[in-house]
Length: 125
Ligand SMILES: [Mg+2]
Image (cartoon, rainbow, N blue to C red; front, side, top):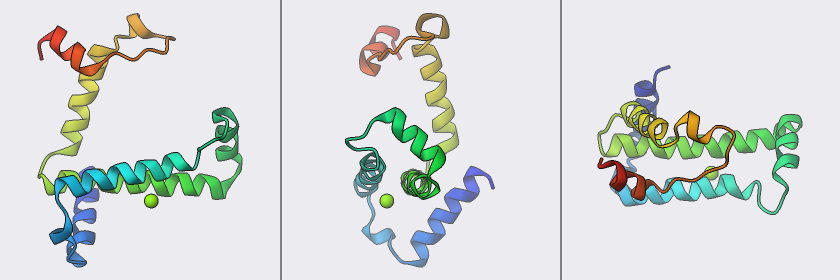
């Protein structure tokens, strides 16, 4: 299934339930954030490396991670549908920008955070 088909599936789910009338871009952004935090809650107050091991060994825990990740993805698809933009193009455009901002030869093996706004100003995008 292609991304456009997944977007259509999300659209149909929303329209069959007549939920579009409750959705604005703000609502969908809130939904994405809430679902991302439900994903984060699965890891709260635990050691990251131990949880990586648990996710590989505990099918029920992995299923919870998969469910919350899918909830975030659903929100992204709904947002792209609501504002009628191409999520694949947006993703590829963002990846292109990230590849320029985080050049392999400058960041390989390093944990770095380059502020997006400052980088954009400096690089005049
Ligand atoms: Mg959820």
